[in-house]
Image (cartoon, rainbow, N blue to C red; front, side):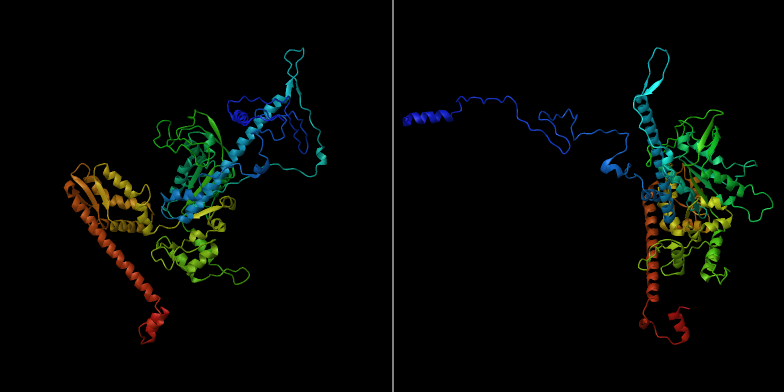
Length: 616
């Protein structure tokens, strides 16, 4: 064995550790070693290689066609997302324009939402069927190849895909129905006194949904062939409101006002052409038919480029916006065919006297053999109290007979008034809330028409507090309208709180609902609107004395702004003190009624005992 000196061994070790030392490259392999990929069903050769740009013959690849239905775990998932508009948002939008009527707004919001969900689903099905038909046509064009021979012009085709034999139809037991689920529409009936917001709610919903909208009065309707308007006029007006866009008109809203005027007459000496005859004509429209409309420009229809009002550009429940300035201008003599299957019909009316029919049904008992007998005095009192001459509403208090009556005939009813919150607005008794389809038949409507209007919403009489809120709260309130009207002349108009309550109290006695508020304001401000424009008056104040019509509105010039605001503050402070005293008296009376027996003053006679403890 060769042994190197110690110095030589140190030099050799340093040479091996030096980075400048030359290293021989490893000898390359002639062929990389690969193992074959084995799955449960297929074994691939060792030369197979994964390439990101080539998925051919790979077990983890597949094909996808967007026209085919979704398969796999997502097959049961809905094809549509959450709606952008819900019944809750519709009611919140109605709250900005309509005060009170919470129960009616809920019913109307749900009914309109369900209807346009149905319309959207039908539109989606139509688009899907059209897409499938187009795809089938493309496949047939690919599978059938034209035969080319020596005969010019011959276009015979041959199917390149052989057909697979099927079993005879006689071998299949029974009949197979592959039709889709049909969604039926639910029309709406709004009933209540005049001026409570029936038409306003329908107009507001039509505005937010961006759909064509028309109102027709049922009073001049007569049976076809008689003098008067035909029932199909409502479809003509809807098409004119849509600027003769048939597709948009077929998804619009038709409001038939004063529908109670077409009730069948109790005693008829001839053919009822304005009652039952009109109901039969409306029955055909509601059920669904094709109405031929000849082009005729309506006077109230918006013209292209001249309409100042435009609806929003997007439909919250669909993808087809409605533009009142769009559509095609009608040509003279052109005929349009309008289907009424998807048109939402909203009936509205005051139905004077219907509360008597309802209370008569509720008050009936039985003594055997189906013989009717009058019930308790509650229903008789309700029928007497709800006469047109007596407008004072009856509150539904917890534990009262009215609450028991509502819980019996209405689902999930709870009284809005709590014993611990005396300032809350109570729920008032309304006999129309207890409506039954048989009541409408007894009123004079045919059963076929009543059965096709399943949704009913009753509106209550407006009370004085609600009228005060109507003056101030809505976006287009009367107070804001008149304030803006005076500001156009450079005049500031103000109302004190006592004046607003007095105006609402005077309007309540008129019996025309919220429309009486405008009558009151026009009466009070008529002189001010005549005298102040163009004068030195810069401030107009309406106080409680002015609302009582004891004096004219107070006029103040430009330099009297301090006096103007001091007069407002003085009257507001008096009103607050008055309200505070009334609340103290109410709480005192309530404590006196609920005071224990040991705290009562000494009783010296039976009459005092009967008055203090028995309450009579």
